[in-house]
Amino acid sequence: MITLYNLIPNLLGFFLGLIIGSFLNVCIHRIPKEESIISPGSHCPKCKNRIKWYDNIPILSYILLGGKCRYCKEQISPIYPAIELLTGILTALLFSQFGISFDAIYFSILTWFLIAISFIDIKELQVPVKPCYFTMVFGIIFSLFTKSNTFMDSILGASLGAGIILFIIETYYIIKGKEGMGYGDANILAAIGAFLGWKKIFFVIMIASLTGAIIGIIILIREKKHSETPLPFGPFLSIGGYLTIFVGNFLLKFYLGG
Ligand SMILES: [Zn+2]
Image (cartoon, rainbow, N blue to C red):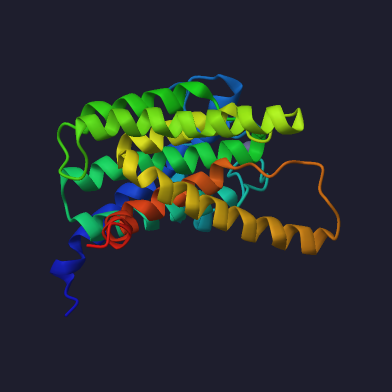
């Protein structure tokens, strides 16, 4: 039976996710420009007015302001509240799975990274190295404290994650004479591997390839021609990484025949 007591982890995860989502918006906006993600505080990109705390409440402020800047009435992109909501929901699901625990936080940190890096990849078609590196290091160090991963699996996961993508890039280059994937994808999979361990890397790639192929075909049908802009693979690796947090153990048992 669902009671309020049962929902406490979900609600906690949801509200934590909303707050982090608001911060991820700042990261997505500033990291590609190599600006500080800490200072100055948020301001309107048009009139440059500082956004007061009460105009910066996730989702709620967007609704109350009618999606416009308080001062110059410039439209605020609905992508901002959408990212906050997405982060809230994905974090709530993790807390629902792991309860209020270290593991919930551990996988939330991977998830927050994946959300930020996906939207940066979609926007810029480029993956910044530093966030991948820090997330990977965090994943390796804190694998010592989680029940879902071991230190050795984490190091092997990061190495294999980067290694597989580099192998694909080099092989594709030898055959086709051009790059099929970005080096950024290797960095993303290294970070994912650090959190999930080496065995689950294969499921991440499987899910990423499958969802990537489906979306690729849909775009191909809709545009009715071969698009020259390459489809960024980071978001699909992210979907693979997030889903594998939930289904990884099940798939491992299934494939090992247990
Ligand atoms: Zn403004």
